[in-house]
Image: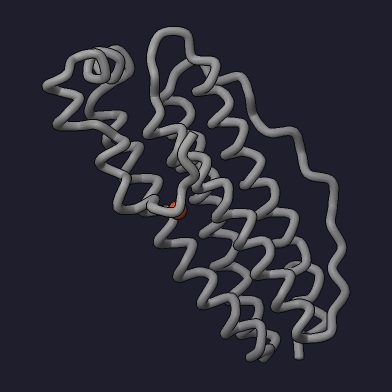
Length: 181
Ligand SMILES: [Fe+2]
């Protein structure tokens, strides 16, 4: 059983992960509109992250459902859309993932204090997954920092460099379930 203390916080996670899904989708749409370069690999990666966050939201719903709790969605805030560089997108993504890990860490602590073992187990599994996702996004941020904005453009226009760093190939193994355009 989910305790009353934990119920509304866990219900809030449903909206939280939907918000993340929207944020990633907006980031992807930003890449669509990018004037000079084709960043397909990163766009595909962001699309995949969006889908994953939506699935995570569903996972929280299933947990609530299994425990006979109603699910209430809150209004999702408008995603950030005033990026000017690709670097900013990934900095923002890392920031969102950090907030998520911190929020769930706090919920794990709360569930232990409330002796709510059902929620504790669920939240610990969720935390493990979110830490993994955070690392994944950080890895990409690292690549972006290493190449820098203008060099990323150069890299994608230079065949040899592209072959070496092509984000599409690089992430292909990680994002096999992405839809092809
Ligand atoms: Fe992911």
